[in-house]
Structures are given as C-alpha cells and as structure tokens.
Amino acid sequence: MPDMLTAAAFARLRLRYGAVPESGEVPAAVEHDFAGGRMVDHYLATPAPGLLVQAPVQALGGLEAVLFLQGAAEGPWQVVLCGAKENARAAFALPQGEWQALLAANGIVLPGEAGFTPPQKSD
Image (cartoon, rainbow, N blue to C red):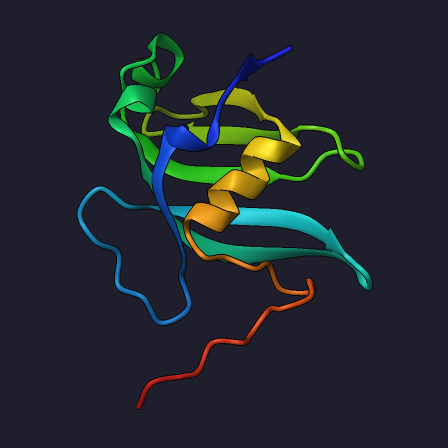
C-alpha cells in the first residue's frame, strides 16, 4: 500500500484551460468517473513544501507532473508523481475525504459533476 497523503500535500490545484503555469506549478491530470464513463481533465498543481521534502519525492530528481487517479467507489485516489529521472514515479494514496477537501479548498467542481461550469475562453 502506498503512503497516504492529505489535501495539504498540494498548496494549489487549478484548471489548466487557458492558464499559464506559474512558478512552482506542474502539469496535473485528473482521471475520474462521471455518468457517461471516465474522463481526464488537465490542471496545474502546486505541491506543498512538505510533500517535496519526502524521501520518495526527493528520489524523483525533481517533480515534472502529477496524476490523480480515481479508484473504486468511495475508495482512495491514487496520486502518481512523475519525476525528472527517466521512468521515475512515486505513488501515494489520497483518501476520498482528503480529495474532496483538496477540491473544495481550490473551488473546483469536476466536469460531469453537479455544479460544474465550463470555463469561458478569453479573447
């Protein structure tokens, strides 16, 4: 079983659509279920300093991307950190309640869920 994370492992999570990455942000993908099947959405994640100092993360040689993968219903999410070293990965579990806390802290409603508002393209 991978180590457990909390919502505090990420200082920020925001939708990638039209956003320019800021310092400290890495590309993130959220693969999740919705009424019509399964989808992947693109975000930008800012790992918290406490996550970056953990030994499995340090062994990656730098963090280049994050994958949030929904598990079985009400089960924990899997968080895969992709490192700078070739094929470097570290996997963690994120309990469902912590996932919901991360979304709420960042004002995110996933596509396919009630309350989702599609982003507007800026001119």
